[in-house]
Length: 130
Image: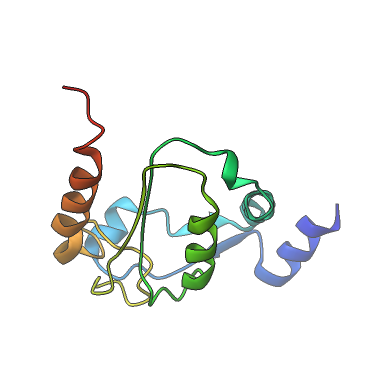
């Protein structure tokens, strides 16, 4: 119960960041409710403790080894825990996003969007229905 009050006292009711460009200004929600961090962190905790060995569906993980928002090493550790027979971990390290977290998309990493699409299509090709 104290988490919401603590976050509001530290961050305020809303957090906000400055958009990097016009596309981000047009399509992103730059102010966000600070209390949204509570369920997000609850989900992070739940996923951190999950038994991924039970997951047998195909899995594709695309990430950057240079990511400054999440732990690239943690991505590798979790990927290795997946029980899927068909799984791939692919890396995009040359995204334009300064923190290497947003790997594709017109707003922040347009130069690597085609790369991301190609990775996804290659992953799906062997499992796509005829």
